[in-house]
Length: 272
Image (cartoon, rainbow, N blue to C red; front, side, top):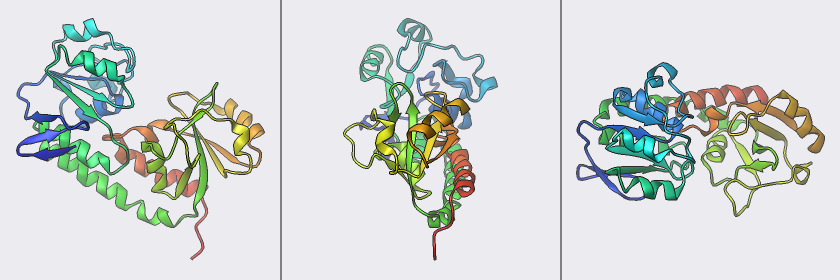
């Protein structure tokens, strides 16, 4: 996601020029929040039912289904000029169909925390919000600098669960894993062909120190903590706010601050 000669390249290399009077549809919850942070809420004409932050700003914006099951006719009726999608959040066939009736399909795919800077500048550039984008970059870098001290925390092997029945974790080739790595927390499994592998909890008994139960996409609750402890005895099992670990965009700034507090409260300092 880079700028070249007055155009901005998205995650698949498509060049986007500066937009005038854009009507924006966003099918990515965290990026919908980012658009609002950039001052673009008045130009939003469609969102998914999962695009809920900031609530008041989004209340008047029509919903057009979910991230995986977009209601195309509802979306078409809003006559967007631009639609924002994401490689992980949305289906490829959805993006291809969108391209048949929406002039500009902007594809995003942040793979790690530092990709937020390019994301801010991509959308700020296309939609004429460069100053707001640079302000977000400044805030993000400040939050990132504050994590440096946490890199001296003792390294921990972490199992981060996103789903139950079947149990699913995250690979190291994910935004979540790379964000946790900033705090010296390293996700298991170490090697996997899938970015979000199906696993057996029993395989991790004695192999991970910490198990994190995310609040999304599966909404883990306190009752699940004992269930996981029974299958991975001796592990520290905790609930964690999934929005703070997996949402890129403006939420990533708050997410780094949240994780700084979360990790400090559950990790001992490494030896000098």
